[in-house]
Amino acid sequence: MEKEVAMNRKIIASAAGIVCGMAVTTAQAGGITVLEKGDSKLSIESKVFTKLVSEKDTAASPNTKTQSASVDRAYFTVKYNFDKEWLMRVTTDIRQASASELSSKNDYVFLKYAYLEGKLAGKAAVLRLGQSHTPWIDYEQGLWKHRYFSKVLVDQNGYDASSDLGIGLKGDVADGKAHYWATLTNGAGYSHTDREGKSMDFDGRIGYDLLPGMTLDLQYRNGYKATKTQPAGANGTETKSTLYQIMATYGQGGDYRVGANLASKKKDPTGGTSVRETAYSVWGWTKLPHNYGAFARFDHTKDNVVPKLKQDHYGVGVEYYPTKHVTLALGYDHVKSSTGGVTSKKDSQIGLWSQFAF
Image 1: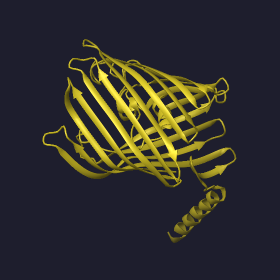
Image 2 (image 1 turned 30 degrees about the vertical axis):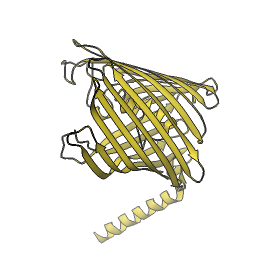
Image 3 (image 1 turned 90 degrees about the vertical axis):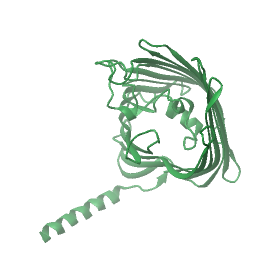
Image 4 (image 1 turned 120 degrees about the vertical axis):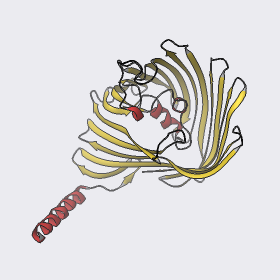
Protein backbone atom coordinates (compact mmCIF):
# COMPACT_ATOMS: atom_id res chain seq x y z
CA MET A 1 0.00 0.00 0.00
CA GLU A 2 2.81 2.41 0.92
CA LYS A 3 4.56 1.59 -2.38
CA GLU A 4 1.38 2.39 -4.33
CA VAL A 5 0.96 5.70 -2.50
CA ALA A 6 4.59 6.60 -3.18
CA MET A 7 4.19 5.63 -6.85
CA ASN A 8 1.04 7.76 -7.17
CA ARG A 9 2.86 10.71 -5.63
CA LYS A 10 5.66 10.33 -8.16
CA ILE A 11 3.18 10.20 -11.04
CA ILE A 12 1.38 13.31 -9.79
CA ALA A 13 4.66 15.14 -9.26
CA SER A 14 5.86 14.19 -12.75
CA ALA A 15 2.60 15.33 -14.35
CA ALA A 16 2.73 18.61 -12.45
CA GLY A 17 6.29 19.13 -13.60
CA ILE A 18 5.34 18.56 -17.25
CA VAL A 19 2.42 20.99 -16.97
CA CYS A 20 4.55 23.62 -15.26
CA GLY A 21 7.18 23.17 -17.96
CA MET A 22 4.65 24.01 -20.68
CA ALA A 23 2.61 26.58 -18.75
CA VAL A 24 2.44 30.25 -19.48
CA THR A 25 1.06 32.06 -16.47
CA THR A 26 1.04 35.68 -17.62
CA ALA A 27 -2.29 37.35 -16.79
CA GLN A 28 -3.90 39.06 -19.78
CA ALA A 29 -7.13 41.00 -20.41
CA GLY A 30 -8.60 37.89 -22.04
CA GLY A 31 -7.80 35.57 -19.16
CA ILE A 32 -4.84 33.47 -18.07
CA THR A 33 -3.12 30.91 -20.27
CA VAL A 34 -2.45 27.89 -18.09
CA LEU A 35 -1.17 25.45 -20.71
CA GLU A 36 0.37 26.00 -24.13
CA LYS A 37 1.99 23.57 -26.54
CA GLY A 38 2.38 24.39 -30.19
CA ASP A 39 -0.91 25.77 -31.56
CA SER A 40 -2.89 24.21 -28.69
CA LYS A 41 -3.70 26.38 -25.70
CA LEU A 42 -5.79 26.04 -22.54
CA SER A 43 -6.93 29.25 -20.84
CA ILE A 44 -9.26 30.24 -18.02
CA GLU A 45 -11.27 33.41 -17.42
CA SER A 46 -13.51 34.66 -14.64
CA LYS A 47 -15.83 37.61 -14.11
CA VAL A 48 -17.80 38.59 -10.99
CA PHE A 49 -20.41 41.35 -10.52
CA THR A 50 -21.19 42.54 -6.99
CA LYS A 51 -23.15 45.41 -5.47
CA LEU A 52 -23.67 47.03 -2.08
CA VAL A 53 -26.83 49.16 -2.30
CA SER A 54 -29.64 50.83 -0.47
CA GLU A 55 -32.94 50.12 -2.24
CA LYS A 56 -36.29 51.87 -1.87
CA ASP A 57 -39.67 50.94 -3.40
CA THR A 58 -42.00 53.92 -2.96
CA ALA A 59 -44.83 52.34 -4.98
CA ALA A 60 -45.34 49.59 -2.40
CA SER A 61 -47.75 50.08 0.48
CA PRO A 62 -46.19 50.51 2.92
CA ASN A 63 -42.98 51.75 1.30
CA THR A 64 -40.10 49.30 1.59
CA LYS A 65 -36.43 50.06 2.24
CA THR A 66 -33.59 47.53 2.23
CA GLN A 67 -29.82 47.55 2.44
CA SER A 68 -27.89 44.58 1.11
CA ALA A 69 -24.73 43.21 -0.43
CA SER A 70 -25.02 40.67 -3.23
CA VAL A 71 -23.14 38.82 -5.94
CA ASP A 72 -25.25 39.42 -9.03
CA ARG A 73 -23.33 37.14 -11.37
CA ALA A 74 -20.21 34.99 -11.32
CA TYR A 75 -18.85 33.50 -14.54
CA PHE A 76 -16.08 30.93 -14.91
CA THR A 77 -14.79 30.08 -18.39
CA VAL A 78 -12.49 27.42 -19.78
CA LYS A 79 -11.33 27.70 -23.39
CA TYR A 80 -9.26 25.20 -25.34
CA ASN A 81 -7.78 26.11 -28.72
CA PHE A 82 -7.11 22.89 -30.61
CA ASP A 83 -5.23 24.92 -33.24
CA LYS A 84 -5.56 28.29 -34.96
CA GLU A 85 -8.89 27.32 -36.54
CA TRP A 86 -10.85 25.37 -33.91
CA LEU A 87 -11.66 25.94 -30.25
CA MET A 88 -14.12 24.87 -27.57
CA ARG A 89 -15.55 26.90 -24.70
CA VAL A 90 -17.43 26.06 -21.50
CA THR A 91 -18.77 28.83 -19.22
CA THR A 92 -20.75 28.47 -15.99
CA ASP A 93 -23.02 31.24 -14.72
CA ILE A 94 -23.99 31.68 -11.06
CA ARG A 95 -26.67 34.11 -9.92
CA GLN A 96 -28.81 34.68 -6.85
CA ALA A 97 -32.39 33.45 -6.84
CA SER A 98 -34.90 36.27 -7.16
CA ALA A 99 -37.73 36.82 -4.67
CA SER A 100 -40.26 35.54 -7.23
CA GLU A 101 -38.48 32.22 -7.70
CA LEU A 102 -39.98 29.80 -5.21
CA SER A 103 -37.03 27.67 -4.22
CA SER A 104 -35.06 26.74 -1.15
CA LYS A 105 -31.86 27.50 -3.06
CA ASN A 106 -30.02 30.77 -2.55
CA ASP A 107 -28.14 30.55 -5.86
CA TYR A 108 -28.68 29.09 -9.30
CA VAL A 109 -25.87 27.58 -11.37
CA PHE A 110 -26.35 27.53 -15.14
CA LEU A 111 -24.37 26.24 -18.05
CA LYS A 112 -24.11 29.51 -19.99
CA TYR A 113 -21.94 28.43 -22.92
CA ALA A 114 -20.77 25.06 -24.21
CA TYR A 115 -19.84 25.20 -27.86
CA LEU A 116 -17.41 24.27 -30.60
CA GLU A 117 -16.18 27.04 -32.89
CA GLY A 118 -14.41 26.62 -36.20
CA LYS A 119 -13.16 29.04 -38.84
CA LEU A 120 -14.51 27.71 -42.14
CA ALA A 121 -13.16 30.63 -44.18
CA GLY A 122 -11.07 32.70 -41.80
CA LYS A 123 -13.00 35.57 -40.19
CA ALA A 124 -15.49 35.59 -43.10
CA ALA A 125 -17.28 32.42 -41.96
CA VAL A 126 -17.09 31.13 -38.38
CA LEU A 127 -19.25 28.19 -37.28
CA ARG A 128 -20.72 27.87 -33.78
CA LEU A 129 -22.29 24.57 -32.67
CA GLY A 130 -23.80 24.01 -29.21
CA GLN A 131 -24.96 26.42 -26.52
CA SER A 132 -23.62 29.78 -27.59
CA HIS A 133 -24.19 33.53 -27.55
CA THR A 134 -27.16 34.85 -29.44
CA PRO A 135 -26.19 37.46 -32.06
CA TRP A 136 -27.17 40.68 -30.29
CA ILE A 137 -26.87 40.90 -26.50
CA ASP A 138 -23.20 40.07 -26.00
CA TYR A 139 -22.31 42.28 -28.96
CA GLU A 140 -24.08 45.33 -27.52
CA GLN A 141 -22.68 44.62 -24.06
CA GLY A 142 -19.21 44.88 -25.60
CA LEU A 143 -20.07 48.40 -26.78
CA TRP A 144 -21.97 49.43 -23.61
CA LYS A 145 -19.20 47.99 -21.37
CA HIS A 146 -21.28 48.32 -18.19
CA ARG A 147 -23.16 45.04 -17.90
CA TYR A 148 -22.11 44.83 -14.25
CA PHE A 149 -24.32 47.88 -13.62
CA SER A 150 -27.20 47.38 -16.08
CA LYS A 151 -28.35 45.02 -18.82
CA VAL A 152 -28.85 46.22 -22.39
CA LEU A 153 -32.39 47.02 -23.60
CA VAL A 154 -33.54 43.73 -25.15
CA ASP A 155 -32.03 41.72 -22.30
CA GLN A 156 -33.60 43.94 -19.62
CA ASN A 157 -37.03 43.65 -21.30
CA GLY A 158 -36.76 39.88 -21.88
CA TYR A 159 -37.09 40.21 -25.67
CA ASP A 160 -34.14 37.88 -26.25
CA ALA A 161 -31.94 35.46 -24.32
CA SER A 162 -28.19 35.98 -24.18
CA SER A 163 -27.45 32.31 -24.89
CA ASP A 164 -29.30 29.40 -26.51
CA LEU A 165 -28.86 25.91 -27.96
CA GLY A 166 -28.40 25.56 -31.70
CA ILE A 167 -26.16 26.37 -34.62
CA GLY A 168 -24.83 29.68 -35.88
CA LEU A 169 -22.66 31.25 -38.55
CA LYS A 170 -20.96 34.63 -38.16
CA GLY A 171 -18.31 36.62 -39.91
CA ASP A 172 -16.65 39.87 -40.92
CA VAL A 173 -16.53 40.77 -44.62
CA ALA A 174 -15.79 43.82 -46.82
CA ASP A 175 -12.37 44.34 -45.23
CA GLY A 176 -13.89 43.96 -41.77
CA LYS A 177 -16.42 46.77 -42.19
CA ALA A 178 -19.51 44.55 -42.57
CA HIS A 179 -20.58 41.96 -39.98
CA TYR A 180 -23.21 39.24 -39.84
CA TRP A 181 -24.38 36.59 -37.38
CA ALA A 182 -27.29 34.20 -37.95
CA THR A 183 -28.52 31.40 -35.65
CA LEU A 184 -31.14 28.66 -35.47
CA THR A 185 -31.88 27.82 -31.82
CA ASN A 186 -34.41 26.07 -29.60
CA GLY A 187 -35.62 29.53 -28.62
CA ALA A 188 -36.25 29.10 -24.89
CA GLY A 189 -32.85 30.40 -23.78
CA TYR A 190 -30.04 28.93 -21.71
CA SER A 191 -32.04 28.79 -18.47
CA HIS A 192 -34.64 26.51 -20.12
CA THR A 193 -32.53 24.11 -22.15
CA ASP A 194 -34.97 21.28 -21.38
CA ARG A 195 -37.67 22.96 -23.47
CA GLU A 196 -38.04 21.87 -27.09
CA GLY A 197 -40.55 22.96 -29.72
CA LYS A 198 -41.85 21.76 -33.07
CA SER A 199 -39.76 24.41 -34.81
CA MET A 200 -36.55 26.33 -34.15
CA ASP A 201 -36.18 30.11 -33.89
CA PHE A 202 -34.18 32.38 -36.18
CA ASP A 203 -32.09 35.18 -34.69
CA GLY A 204 -29.80 37.37 -36.78
CA ARG A 205 -27.80 40.58 -36.80
CA ILE A 206 -26.14 42.48 -39.64
CA GLY A 207 -23.98 45.56 -39.20
CA TYR A 208 -21.76 48.00 -40.98
CA ASP A 209 -19.09 50.40 -39.76
CA LEU A 210 -20.16 53.56 -41.58
CA LEU A 211 -17.13 55.60 -40.48
CA PRO A 212 -14.19 54.93 -38.18
CA GLY A 213 -15.78 54.51 -34.74
CA MET A 214 -19.37 54.56 -36.05
CA THR A 215 -21.53 51.38 -36.09
CA LEU A 216 -24.99 50.67 -37.47
CA ASP A 217 -26.67 47.33 -36.67
CA LEU A 218 -30.01 45.66 -37.40
CA GLN A 219 -31.57 42.67 -35.60
CA TYR A 220 -34.39 40.36 -36.65
CA ARG A 221 -35.66 37.58 -34.42
CA ASN A 222 -38.62 35.31 -35.21
CA GLY A 223 -40.00 32.14 -33.62
CA TYR A 224 -42.07 30.56 -30.87
CA LYS A 225 -39.47 30.39 -28.07
CA ALA A 226 -40.24 26.65 -27.70
CA THR A 227 -43.97 27.27 -27.00
CA LYS A 228 -45.09 25.51 -30.21
CA THR A 229 -45.05 21.97 -28.83
CA GLN A 230 -46.60 18.55 -29.09
CA PRO A 231 -48.66 18.07 -27.00
CA ALA A 232 -49.81 21.68 -27.20
CA GLY A 233 -49.21 23.81 -24.12
CA ALA A 234 -46.31 21.79 -22.75
CA ASN A 235 -44.23 24.99 -22.41
CA GLY A 236 -47.08 27.48 -22.02
CA THR A 237 -49.44 29.15 -24.48
CA GLU A 238 -48.27 28.84 -28.07
CA THR A 239 -47.01 32.33 -28.90
CA LYS A 240 -45.15 33.60 -31.93
CA SER A 241 -42.63 36.34 -31.10
CA THR A 242 -41.11 38.75 -33.61
CA LEU A 243 -38.42 41.29 -32.74
CA TYR A 244 -36.93 44.11 -34.81
CA GLN A 245 -34.14 46.35 -33.56
CA ILE A 246 -31.83 49.04 -34.93
CA MET A 247 -28.86 50.57 -33.11
CA ALA A 248 -26.33 53.27 -33.99
CA THR A 249 -23.24 54.04 -31.91
CA TYR A 250 -20.20 56.27 -32.15
CA GLY A 251 -17.00 56.24 -30.15
CA GLN A 252 -13.23 56.25 -30.18
CA GLY A 253 -11.56 53.11 -28.84
CA GLY A 254 -11.67 52.92 -25.08
CA ASP A 255 -12.11 56.66 -24.58
CA TYR A 256 -15.87 57.10 -25.03
CA ARG A 257 -18.96 55.79 -26.83
CA VAL A 258 -22.59 56.90 -27.21
CA GLY A 259 -25.43 54.79 -28.60
CA ALA A 260 -29.15 54.75 -29.39
CA ASN A 261 -31.50 51.77 -29.85
CA LEU A 262 -35.03 51.39 -31.18
CA ALA A 263 -36.80 48.03 -30.75
CA SER A 264 -40.23 46.62 -31.61
CA LYS A 265 -41.50 43.33 -30.16
CA LYS A 266 -44.75 41.62 -31.24
CA LYS A 267 -46.32 38.64 -29.46
CA ASP A 268 -49.07 36.64 -31.20
CA PRO A 269 -50.60 34.04 -28.85
CA THR A 270 -52.66 31.38 -30.62
CA GLY A 271 -56.33 32.22 -30.09
CA GLY A 272 -55.42 35.42 -28.24
CA THR A 273 -54.82 39.12 -28.86
CA SER A 274 -51.58 40.39 -30.32
CA VAL A 275 -49.43 42.61 -28.10
CA ARG A 276 -46.86 45.01 -29.49
CA GLU A 277 -44.20 46.68 -27.38
CA THR A 278 -41.93 49.47 -28.55
CA ALA A 279 -38.83 50.55 -26.69
CA TYR A 280 -35.91 52.88 -27.14
CA SER A 281 -32.67 53.46 -25.32
CA VAL A 282 -29.94 56.11 -25.27
CA TRP A 283 -26.67 55.52 -23.45
CA GLY A 284 -23.07 56.62 -23.21
CA TRP A 285 -19.84 56.42 -21.26
CA THR A 286 -16.49 58.17 -21.17
CA LYS A 287 -13.11 57.79 -19.56
CA LEU A 288 -11.93 60.63 -17.31
CA PRO A 289 -8.44 61.57 -16.06
CA HIS A 290 -6.76 59.77 -13.14
CA ASN A 291 -8.41 56.34 -13.63
CA TYR A 292 -11.97 57.64 -13.46
CA GLY A 293 -14.94 57.34 -15.79
CA ALA A 294 -18.65 58.15 -16.06
CA PHE A 295 -21.66 56.48 -17.66
CA ALA A 296 -25.42 56.94 -18.08
CA ARG A 297 -28.38 55.28 -19.82
CA PHE A 298 -32.12 55.79 -20.28
CA ASP A 299 -34.60 53.11 -21.44
CA HIS A 300 -38.29 53.66 -22.25
CA THR A 301 -40.84 50.93 -22.98
CA LYS A 302 -44.56 50.99 -23.76
CA ASP A 303 -47.19 48.61 -25.22
CA ASN A 304 -50.42 48.95 -27.20
CA VAL A 305 -52.69 47.26 -24.64
CA VAL A 306 -55.46 49.24 -22.92
CA PRO A 307 -54.69 50.32 -20.22
CA LYS A 308 -51.22 50.98 -21.60
CA LEU A 309 -48.09 49.92 -19.77
CA LYS A 310 -45.18 52.36 -19.65
CA GLN A 311 -41.79 51.91 -18.02
CA ASP A 312 -38.83 54.27 -17.66
CA HIS A 313 -35.44 53.06 -16.50
CA TYR A 314 -32.40 55.25 -16.05
CA GLY A 315 -29.05 54.93 -14.35
CA VAL A 316 -25.94 57.07 -13.85
CA GLY A 317 -22.61 56.45 -12.24
CA VAL A 318 -18.98 57.43 -11.72
CA GLU A 319 -16.30 54.74 -12.05
CA TYR A 320 -12.86 54.21 -10.58
CA TYR A 321 -10.27 51.69 -11.82
CA PRO A 322 -7.89 50.98 -8.92
CA THR A 323 -6.12 48.23 -10.86
CA LYS A 324 -6.30 46.49 -14.24
CA HIS A 325 -8.83 43.83 -13.28
CA VAL A 326 -11.13 45.82 -10.95
CA THR A 327 -13.85 48.38 -11.67
CA LEU A 328 -15.75 50.22 -8.91
CA ALA A 329 -18.75 52.49 -9.52
CA LEU A 330 -20.87 54.74 -7.33
CA GLY A 331 -24.23 54.75 -9.05
CA TYR A 332 -27.95 55.44 -8.98
CA ASP A 333 -30.49 53.19 -10.72
CA HIS A 334 -34.22 53.99 -10.99
CA VAL A 335 -37.19 52.15 -12.52
CA LYS A 336 -40.73 53.51 -12.76
CA SER A 337 -43.64 51.54 -14.23
CA SER A 338 -47.25 52.63 -14.72
CA THR A 339 -50.43 51.07 -16.10
CA GLY A 340 -53.05 53.44 -17.44
CA GLY A 341 -51.23 56.34 -15.81
CA VAL A 342 -51.25 54.73 -12.34
CA THR A 343 -47.78 54.02 -10.92
CA SER A 344 -47.32 50.32 -10.23
CA LYS A 345 -43.58 50.30 -9.48
CA LYS A 346 -41.11 52.96 -8.39
CA ASP A 347 -37.86 51.38 -7.36
CA SER A 348 -34.53 53.14 -6.70
CA GLN A 349 -31.07 51.80 -5.85
CA ILE A 350 -28.04 53.80 -4.79
CA GLY A 351 -24.69 52.36 -3.82
CA LEU A 352 -21.50 50.67 -4.97
CA TRP A 353 -21.35 48.35 -8.00
CA SER A 354 -18.18 46.43 -8.92
CA GLN A 355 -16.69 44.12 -11.50
CA PHE A 356 -13.70 41.80 -11.00
CA ALA A 357 -12.36 40.17 -14.16
CA PHE A 358 -9.33 38.37 -15.46
